[in-house]
Length: 194
Length: 195
Image (cartoon, rainbow over all chains, first blue to last red; front, side, top):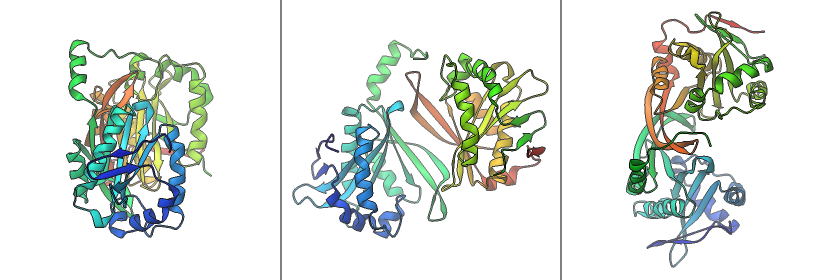
């Protein structure tokens, strides 16, 4: 966890989670409306938040995860979380985020997700970031769109949430497409085993 | 625990791999073109890798993680290829379809016939809700196999996978249990042999 920097945006401070965030994560993610848009359980079990936060450092050290607590710059109130689940072999990260219900509709998710996507590309060296959301939750898709992601498809009934099979939309963004196209134009990719 | 049954289709026999298949797997999957179309097949195919792969099949089947078949054909010498359901996910009731076919057997519909059989196995025996498949977009023949299996094109993931240092576009196809049941005219599996 110590390997992760603090990311400052206009209104937010994204910092590593600490175990002290556990009770607040449980309270905010325990909100039915938040849980319904994620794969989180409801009710949110005691101890889960602490166990999850404790598990983060291992993934971060292995380069398989990045996770930030999203706080309001100034007062430091925890309002959400953004994480990347990283597949180093394919240089790609899966974006996930949640925002406490009280703070919905103010662009905080977009602001935080943008910062983490940029971190993924510029610091972690990712080539692609993609994100998935339940199709019944288009607000999450709008966040991804505002982050510059393109809609790439819809996986039908791909996820079972609380006993119901849910359609899932998938969005993706690539690092610096203009630069890459220039490279491809001059030298076509050679497909050879490494 | 019942063992993995053999599945008989019109022209093919789908049976569990044995270690005796390893040299043939290494030779056929080690073909440059076959390897280049698959996410996980290395090139050159290292000695011992086929044995290691085959060794995972039985325990993975018993744990409900995957079902992998050797595809054999009485009309062809040796192995035709491999087909399977991998990443079986009970929580979400889904699995991923995967296959490869030896190059000298391409273009005869073997992949479609074998894939239809394991899709049928997934829905009728494993009780899955969904089967999906992924292929490199530069290999549209694989997409045609999925289409002929009744799958619908669901997504085009840009530069999603890195294969041999190159970022590849990937297409995703899927079929749901209800769709499979409605379109199924005659069964793909003619006989199911439990040893």
